[in-house]
Amino acid sequence: MPFIEESDLLELHKDVDKAQIINERLLDQIKFKNKELKKSKIQRNVFAGITGLFLIGGLAFTSFTAGLSSSGGFNRKTSNDLVLTSIDSVDAIRTRLENLKEQNEELSLVKEFYLAKEFLQKEKIYSVQVKSFVDNNVTLASEALTNTLFVKTNPFYSYSLGNFETLEEAQSFRKQLVDIGFGDAFVASYQDGKRVQIEDPF
Image (cartoon, rainbow, N blue to C red; front, side):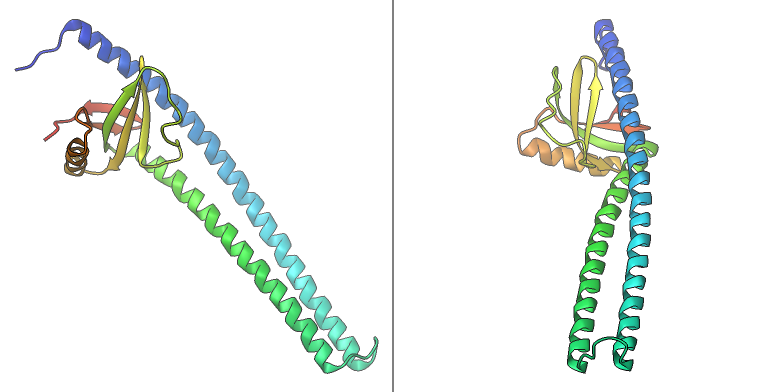
């Protein structure tokens, strides 16, 4: 039966403390991003409301001017001119609606990202740690990736790949990583943004 030296145990405790500090920082960052997301949602709704009012106003104005010109109130235009004007304004409205749909889809993706981050903090997940560094090398990957974990375990920064619901999935992924050259990769479980334990690799 393997045993752990006291010095190794102390190092593990230090690593756990450092991981807790990093997780607290990440929680603060997520809270900040959630506030930004709420702010952008409010801005989007206000923008959509204002755009709707402009569209309604534009349609009312177009209807009003079309009614006046057909009754002779303004310069008389031919019916062809009126049709061309109506088609141009309809095309402008369609273009504007398409732009709004694209912006809405982008905001939905951002919302899904933050919801996934919240899920990862609440549920127990498994991830495969592939490397640890003494220095924080932030250029390795973006923190926006939901499939990557960055954990500070004093004095190391640990990089883990994959977020799995079951241990078997994580073990299978670890085996694939070992096969392609990550011989030191191991599976760890996380809950509430903290490492729970290092799992059996098989």
